[in-house]
Amino acid sequence: MKTVKFLMIAILIASVTSTVAAQKKVDPTGTWTYEASEAPYEYSTGDFVIEKDGKEYTAKLVFGEHYELKATDVKYEKNEISFKVYIEGESVFVKGTVGKESIEGTASYSEGTIPYTAKKKK
Image (spheres, one colour):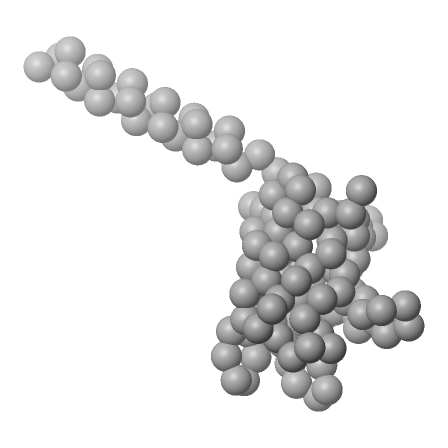
């Protein structure tokens, strides 16, 4: 019985340790090219630019060469980024899971939720 308890404890410790190791914090700063095929054409591709100013993160969306939207309420915790942008008077809540080379997430607004993927620019 002691052997079974010991094995169960060892398995539990190993799984917690691997989970913590897998959640190593990734630096979200940089330019990420995103694609959201279900979004309206003019917003279906662009860049997220994420920067760090002191302890706070900032973000903006860039469409083409001349159109930028500054994000508000930018938060980054446990490899999850989230922020709000206003597009044509509509509040859009963007969130995603940040990996080393990609972000996968959703953009939610009054008419639904749109999935997106983003790749880090080199």
